[in-house]
Length: 117
Image 1: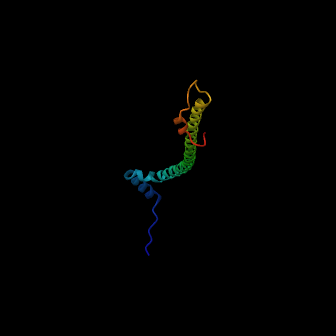
Image 2: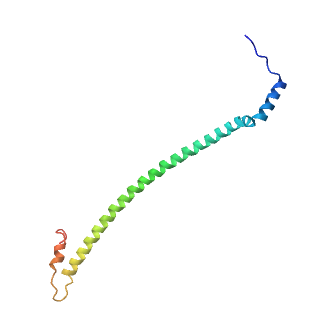
Image 3: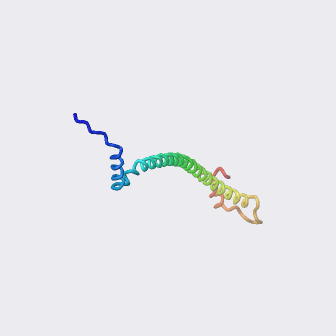
């Protein structure tokens, strides 16, 4: 087996000087790797935080959609009740507050639902 002789410190310096002259970026690579690893870890934490915030926002959106559906249903009921109040008001006007010879309009009574009269 042939053993390679250990390079002398002086030749190591020469190799480093040549390497520095020919490929200075190669000497910066370990520092760049460390910096990029730290930045990657920081960005991963931020991405995890944003994913959590997105899940929270999606949950709030689902709740808002449920509330809007409930409000629409309530609005529909309110409109239905307002129409019924208008029908009853017409009936009261026809029955309780007749003008002298005014007769009850059968069309008004026909429009009303049976449970109203």
